[in-house]
Length: 565
Ligand code: AMP
Image: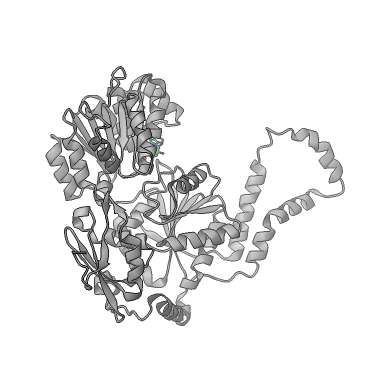
């Protein structure tokens, strides 16, 4: 295996990564680092998040910069605030042994005044989200005249979020740019176009196969009925006592409700969703990072850009509508060589979706039995025994207590002591699982299941009815109920595809896919058919909100609204 020294890195950088616990370079680092430090101008790195991209560009940048010169020389542009902060944190660790190098993070939602002050102090590396960077450029608060290196990180995600114009603007406003390094998990045409326009004969490096999920992930699914979904989630958490995981829900309301319920039942969990203020969000993230929270429950939009190490499990409380979202969610585990488990709790009707997902992730998704109450107790018991055996008693002054303990337990046998310790830990589980039922939806339960479906249809869908062709997706829906056609001033120009647009409006409005009818997307605007009863909620959630520095307009398309308002 190659070492960091052999890649040609400065010894101060090698020392820093060694202290960070990196032993060997990851494949993208092995390929990119030597190429970049030897003066390659332009580079395209095709790699998923979690492959070690930050070090692949961060270490060469630090080696190439001139620490004597106190002006911005390198610019890293990335899609989200979280990613921005992660990149800065890593770069700060990498530069630990290099004097005089400063790095700053600029992103929206935080004081621009403080960021301007930081920039004025003299920084060599700026890590920025596109919107805030443009704001700074327009205020003439940042000087990009002498930027030599521009890194575009998660380029496809930036385009998906509608930042194409901003990225081009940034590339056009870095006149001294010598090198452009673009990293992306996928290579849509828009990115090819950007690379053709702004890069010269880029070296292309690919790690893994594009669009595939990580091979270190064990994909599993559990089939249950709608009314047992929560119970199944709880059982799966209990069956994995050491779990450190993220649960994904489709809606904010689900995330919040489940977090509250599980907290009441004694689990270390909190929710991350779009209604949180930035300080609330930071608090939850910090608690999760330092592991005071064992579980995080999140919607897709809220979880964007989260990179937390050593996530053991990702749980899909419900399957996402979009297959790509599945890859995104589950890619949060099995990172940097470790293994992870991706669990989906599904309804029998959703099995067809798994077939599509298997094709994309190029890995089987294995059907698993939801464990019985007994299985859970046994698993917890073994976990507890290991914990007991491995308890660290080297730090406390336990010896002093031994005589007291011996005296107190003089008449109690070792077996008794063990039983009592176990009782303390297990009473909750044994009582709870004593009469626990089977949560698996089985073929012989078909009638019962049909009953569930009927109820669910009645409850969730109002008087809507789906047309027979389920796999045809949303356009094949044949609504019987009244729909309202809504206009929105967002279109394909904003970087959305139909699936990502759908996910966006549903996440923003906290509605379920079932309320949607036909979606008609044009370049600048779109029209969405929505259940009449849900239209108001969607308008209230979206109209007037900010998207990419622009005000979203949404209104009833057929009541004099439309384009004009
Ligand atoms: P990234 O793709 O840059 O977000 O990195 C994913 C995670 O892997 C981060 O938490 C890094 O700290 C970690 N990482 C990156 N490179 C290595 C390496 N060579 N050895 C071990 N961990 C690494």
